Structure formats: structure tokens, C-alpha cells
Length: 505
Image (cartoon, rainbow, N blue to C red; front, top):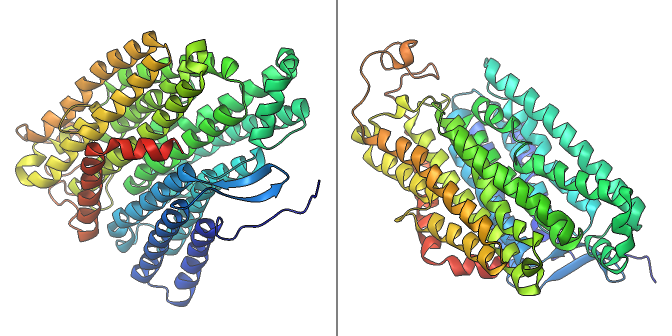
């Protein structure tokens, strides 16, 4: 067998565009040193990356860095969907960051460069065909976020969130790397497809403690990235301490990356009968704990963070059907994988819309504040509050938020098709529990504004961010992101099968 690897530059075009964006941002910041130019360069690069990924993904599947039948980079329909979504999320977060950067609270060059680097990791992640590419891409997506979380100057909460996120992520990466090393020691393979074939052909390997430890470490290490319970404690602190646009990126692109990485190893490499029960347990714990703790939250971003934890449970739920024999048939597995990806796509769109609305309703540079800080917001800013309400209703899975409704129906249908009716009941019960805090926050938007000091600690009209709560962000770009994210969620809500078809490719 030849060891010379073929290189398909067309397949690598989205990665080239994403990495090139990071380089151009550095040059723009060095040569022009104007925040507006740097931000525009990053935004154009993100848009070009999304367009390039869509064009390459519209054709047939492309493979590169191949040795024999094993390839390290496979760019197909699902990889294109992930790349497009990550690039568009990056574009949206850049637009949300405009007021923050213009106010000088974060250095524009470093901020945009780190976001472009993270986008590069997300673009490559969807096409990863071996463990090394997968882990390197996932870390490229995650590493810049450690710094971005702590970029809110003069904020102790931001520094604490960055340290928490860094320490927990390092532990998660260590577990994943150790699991990958043990998996290589047990199977002699690094490519995901080859590992899966070896474990399927040699069932005796599954009886080895080495293989059991390897599978457990890989799954648990990636569960940290998804913020699955009991590996979730970092998420609320990191989200609440980060600047609002960075929290939006953590809750969307970073979460999507973790889901894609976990899905890749479960689908191609690890035995379903071993990972299925673990994923079912993680799904039940994650959605239940996330929803119950969210009921008690009073800070807006922490509520959205715990909601994001619960949503991770819904994303993992279809993979829990692999625990049963009926869920391991070819059709059931295809439906489960497609449902997990489709739900993740619907979720990140609605989550971005929710964060965009919070940014629009809060003062420039402020944190998310409390639920009481948003009380009566609909009376002052009806359209922004309506967009937030629609996003929250969509996350709850109620009409007219059809994207969230169809996402939950897709998950339940895949579980029923896989014979996991008990898990479908758990999803349904948790969806009802989640209604309480989503509707509570939505109702607060139309309630009468609270009189007197907010929370008893701030002067009237001053939110928890230390800025006047009656002076919300008025940047045009924030309104554009809010409108586009809301429109995209509405459109996909009427065409959910499109996302399912692409996710199944």
C-alpha cells in the first residue's frame, strides 16, 4: 500500500478560507489599526467561509489525506452543514460584538483573530476522519475561547470564568487524549472508520479492560465539551462571566463542536452497544438536572446557560436509543444521528436569537443582568422583546416557534423508531418542566416594570452591569443579527426536512 497521501485542495477550501481570515485579521489590525476595519475583515472572511463550504458541500463527498481506504479529512453534506453553521455563527457573534469593540472594552484585533481561529477549528471538525484531526480541531475551536471569556476588562467575574473554563477544559482534553491513546494501543488504528471496523470484527477486544477504559475516557472527555451532567459545572460560570457575545458563541458554536465530535466517534469508531447505555444515562441526567436548576435562576445568562445544559440532554437523547437492539439497526441509527445533528442546528439558531435579543435589550458592555432587569422591556422595545420571546418559545418547543417544536418532535420520533419509548417519555416530561422558566422569562418581558432599585443594590435605572438599564444597545448590526437569526429560525421551522436530509448525508 502506498503511504503517499493525496491532497484535494477543493475539499480543503473552507479550511483555507477560515485560516486565511485569521491571518488577514492580524494584518488588518497591524497595518490599519482601526477597530471598524478589523471587524469588517473578520466578517467578510466568515461570510466567504460559509459560502465556500456551501459550494464545496453542494457536490459529491470529497476525501483527502488518504492512505488506502482511510482518510483523515472527509468533506460531505454533514461536514458542509457544520462548517456553514459555524461560519454564520461567527459572523453573527462578530456583529453582536460591534458595540463592545467600539467602546474599547476589548481589543478588536485580538478579539477578531481569536474568533477566526476558533471558526477554523469548527470548520475542520466536521470533516475530521481520524482521532488526531478530531482532537486538534476541537482544541482549535476551544483554546481561543479561554482568552475570549476573560477579555472583559476590569471584571473579576470574567477572570474567574476564564480560569474555571480553562482548568475544566484542560482536564477534559487530558481525558480525551488518554482515551485516544489507549484506543490506539488496543486497536492499532487512528482513523475512525478503521477503529470501528476492528472493534466490530474482533469482539474479544471489548472484553479487555484497556478497551473499556479507552471508550469510557473518550466519551466522558467529550461529554465535558457538550456540558453534559455531571461534567457541566463550568458552563454557568463561564457563560455568566464572559462578555455577552462570547457567551453566545460558547452556547452555540462551542456546543455544536462538542456534539459533532461526540457524534463522530460514536457513529464511526466506538461500539454502539457499549456507548448507548452511557449516552442514555447522560441524556437523562443532563436534561433533568439542567431543567430543574434553571427553574431557580434569577440571572438571565445563567438561566440561558442551564437551559443550554438541558438542551444538550435533548441532543444526546437520540444517541441513547443505541442502547437497545432495535435502536442499532441501520435505519434507526441513521435517524438517530440525523436527529442529533438537526436538533443541534435548530438549537444554535434559537440560542443565537435569544442572546442577540438580550444584547439588544441591555446597555452596551453590560452583562446579562437579572430577569427583573428585563421586566417590562416589551413596553419600551416591543420588537426586540418579541424576538426574545419567540426565541424562548422556540427553545421551549411551542408554536409559533416551529423550529424548536419540530426539533423535539424529531428527537421523539427517532427514539420511538429505535424502540426507546421510555426515553421519549423522559424527553416529553422534561420539555414540560422547561416550559416553566421559559414562560416565566417571557412573561417578565410584558410585565409591569419593577419600581425602585433593582435587587436592592443598584440605583434606579442601573442594571447589574453598572450601566443605565434604560439605555439598551442601539447598534444597527445587533438589530440585523437579531432579525436574521429570528427569520432563519422561522424559515427552518417551516422546512425542517431540509436540515434532516443534509444531516443524514
